[in-house]
Length: 88
Image (cartoon, rainbow, N blue to C red; front, side, top):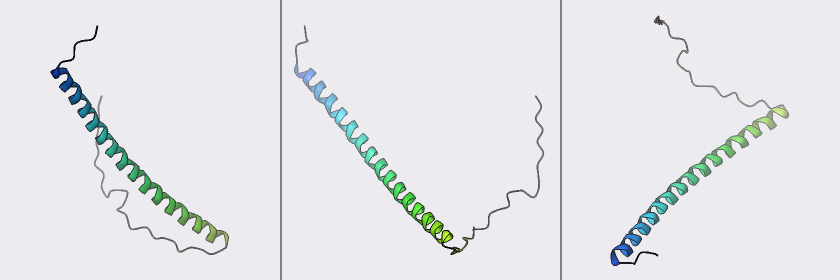
C-alpha cells in the first residue's frame, strides 16, 4: 500500500527533480565543452595530415621541401653528474 501523499512529500519530489535537472544541465554543458575540444583537435589533426600529404606529394615529384629547423634545445646531457647510492 503506497504512502499517502502529503504536501511535504510533494515538495520533496519537486526538490529531487529540480536537483536532477540541474545535474543533467551541468553534465550537458561539460559534454558540449568536451565535444568542442574534440572538434578543435580533429580540425588541427586534419591540417597536419594535409600538410604531411602535401610534403609527400612534393617528395614524390622530386621537389625537396625546405627542411624545418628545430629550435635549439638544452643539452640532453648535464655537464656534471651527481652520484647517488642506494643501499637495501
